[in-house]
Image (cartoon, rainbow over all chains, first blue to last red):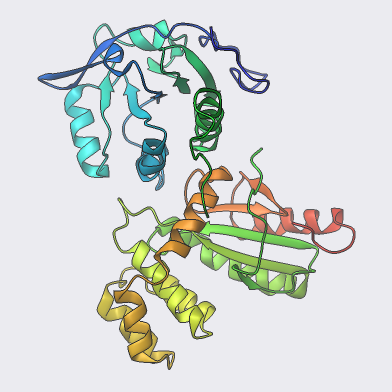
Length: 183
Length: 182
């Protein structure tokens, strides 16, 4: 099992209690619809890092919401050969409309039936709301959880934590890989 | 709480003294209506705090939802290359719904900028790398939408109403002994 460096662990606000799967756990596999006739399976991405972004719902009333931000950073995620997957309990038609409206360039997966099953498997379902938490998981190339973060549901967590985790992961697996930005 | 990872430096656009007791840094997008609303609030607190405030603006264009924001940022930089960054910054926020190329050229003309140089800088995307650099630095600092503010290097997650900003900036200024050290 890959060791987890200090500081790279499941981070949660102290006041909230979640049972998000911790680093080192094998990420539960899933197959979810991304369009009415297309599915995506987690095991298809073994061999490369995967960024799983659970979010409560497709439509948000503010500019610069979480999915928009990840969309803007996609070229940087690709530098780590990272695969970005968004997951919410919304149906595929809702996802299609949202992705089209926001010009998203990564798949949105529909954790719709059984509702929230994947979110439950990862320990980030909110039964009181019927949605997932706002949670981030970075999986290593072996399909294990390397880092995770559960944000307060109303707070966009940003991308900095994911990039730090990918930096750390890249330094462990391929120290010669260029991981810093030239800004 | 997220912290600013790229300190204020010579590549930044700064209004007010670097030695001011409080520095307000904004990551913003010229096409974002929330940034437009925040613009008036920033102007208000600048007027009230005067030389006690150093204001810094960095670009954070959300290009997929605001298709003209990137070009507008480049226009601000192109104006900055001719010594008129803040003048263009003000015009862009005052005209958020008119950020197409023809209007950008018109604004440049109204500011007395050298037309061939300005147009060439836009055409050649001379400042695209600078704008992207601002954006990536913001990502690393935990910018999670627009606008995002940092006060003396700490991300400000509260309201950016003029009243709240003023109160938070006053408190930060009172806590700061000596020159700002972002």
